Amino acid sequence: MTGATGALMGIRVLTALRTLNVETHLIISKWAASTISYETDYHPGNVKALADHVYNINDMAAPISSGSFRTDGMIIVPCSMKTLAAISSGFCDDLISRAADVTLKDRRKLVLVTRETPLSSIHLQNMLTVSRCGAIICPPMPAFYIKPSSIDDLIDQSVGRVLDLFDLDMGNFERWNGLKG
Image 1 (cartoon, rainbow, N blue to C red):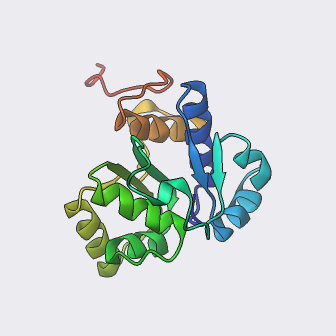
Image 2: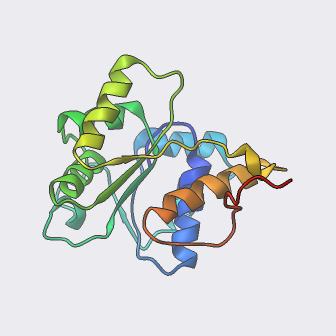
Image 3: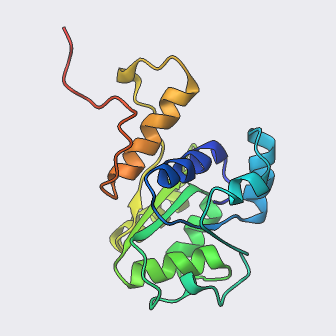
């Protein structure tokens, strides 16, 4: 998790993966910890408790820093533009960018739930660069066709779309089924 707004989405992804019995490895950046406290009722320690394994962002010797450590992929949610830029340039100055770099080089699935608006040309270029390297850019776009009654409905839909990319289904969001007349 990075410091972009949308900490609740990261928490909900962790909760969903826990429910689905998927092993999780969590890194929380300094600014993500601040954002968690600011945007949610969670304490960063409570969020860490949702993961199977937690790493310090500066632990460049963590298992996930090596391609020989097998994973099914990586989700960065939320993904700040700073983190996107680091991944795009291959600048691995922390464990998040290093683990993302390893995920790309080993051709594993890397999903970036980017959070910024409006987007500058630099942001768009960085997204294009990582996309060409195999990453999936998956901004949390609201699906208004679900006629949401709460923010939770929108978050569930966005989290569900992210999990779909890994063939995981919580079955808790409405999918498009054509126009209902």
